[in-house]
Image 1 (tube, rainbow, N blue to C red):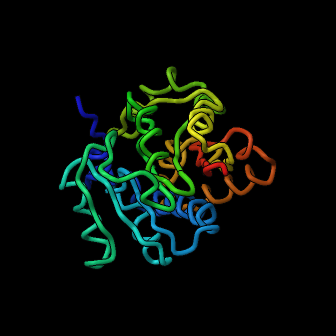
Image 2 (cartoon, rainbow, N blue to C red; image 1 turned 90 degrees about the vertical axis):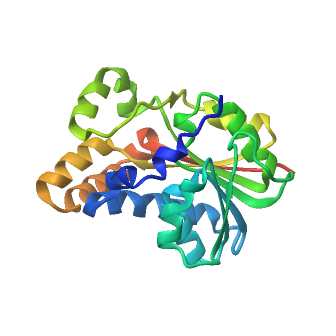
Length: 241
């Protein structure tokens, strides 16, 4: 059976999780890290797998990257059409675990908000690496930090957020090891936030601004907490040789 988690992440309901000052702060952190990891490949051909959420494609196009988005269904392009000028990106509806592109078709391949919602995540990583010429960049959550309490706190998180969904948390090093096995062993890891997103969201609603989030995450970065225990993880894995 096909797995299509990006149909949900491409929806307007999902996008509401990132509205407001705190949501914009999350997306700024994510895109800033991604653009830094893409900096060695200016103007690259980028495939954004499952990128119908439009969290990255508009920013990448604005920075001169040639963007193609792969989505499970045609409906996954709706937000892209809203936020990107016509002709500024390509879209392909397909089975994300069986990408319809030749080997090494793109300089860099991205997958955000995807691996944590796929039972067949290893197959997905294999496809990302197959069609990438230079590098793969993915995000995921591992079991370090507050994610070690995932099973205990998920019900509480769902009551607070309402529209959250379950996700896979990976063992430390599990995703990097899979990329290395496929020949993408030159790796850089960046971690986004130390404090869980749900805490930021609750306080952001209460305070009506992102000042607390910015302050606590800056302090966490200074003291090395984000680097050691932060989540989500953003991994750039570069093809060896």
